[in-house]
Image (cartoon, rainbow over all chains, first blue to last red; front, side, top):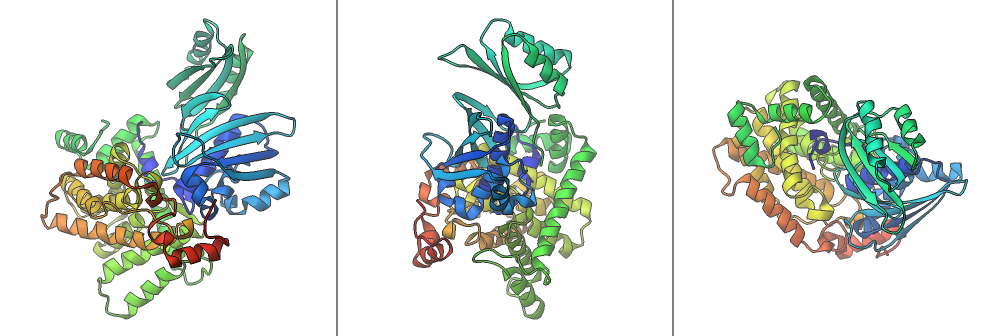
Length: 223
Length: 296
């Protein structure tokens, strides 16, 4: 992948660890953005290096802050527990072998007040960079550094073309695009990344389309 | 204008008669939606944050710049070199105190710039500011040094790794040291070839360095490892500017570092299960801080 000089000199962050604090906060933040709802309960499952050093690096505080919507350079990070308790958010940290994944990987199970839930798995790959590798049953691969669109749609001919033509009409330039098909069911997910912002009306247009179940947008994270 | 490695970077510099920092800015403006001025300003802002981190840890009025095991060492060193005959010489001693200062701010959950990581965030600020002060350089020269270091970091990221979990401390402090060495050479008027020569020496000198954090924290040996990263950058730049060549070229050193990283057992890669983390004192400290000897 292409590095930015600001991947190397950056991010501006709250310490102590870019892999275990900033990266963790970023994964938590993106997970919440994908979920799109206020998190009332969250369970974290940490793998490898994450599981062994999380207490001292504030990984727990960072993950919790992210899931509450705080960015990695937000000074409220050090008070994540107090803030979570005040908001009445239930949280639990566990360690778990997540298989053949990066040493700094976490699985986040989020629950909302109204009964929705979602699982997001992400890895902190160094220098504050992250990779989101799983959303519920789908394996994915994106890093949150682009405006990211995630759709859930019925796997039918023409749906992809219809989605991309809506974007083309709005002159949204696509940087990366990947289609994931659910082997067991009828659904597919499109993960699309763009350099530019994507307006809410574009999202609305896609949502209105036949066969499209859901669309989520994650704004690009710049630090 | 993308470059996969040092060889390609130097080819671009030679062909287009550019410095490494020029290529860094041009490339960034092509790959992103930022103008050259915007890129320069963001980098300048990063430098300002670095300066603030140095000052915060050395500010006698700040009483809470500490972690569980470290805090106050930067100030100790400053008092020492200001009042005694320094063994290292004032510039190096000052640079080390700067590195320690930033690391203390980091560990107290203060704001720092990861360069390339938080575990190595003391090296670049220390080197840049100490050299700036020693040679009375202007800010633009230092920003160009910082831009130079970013290109070196990109090459290491692409061909090896930049995290302790993957490659040990050689990937974090080693990389920061290599980046800083190139920055010094650029700031003092060296060529792109010399910059990468200094990076090669710096990275080679820290080859094999493990990541063995006591109690799993970013304190010991991390803060003092930033001191070695800082001084190592300075000695690598000095040797380079004296005409001393790295026997192994930069690209090969980078690949070797990546391979060594993969060969390091996992208990020497940021899991706090080897090295000084598992010494009797290391274990005692973990128990004292976390109330347990082993993390489950």
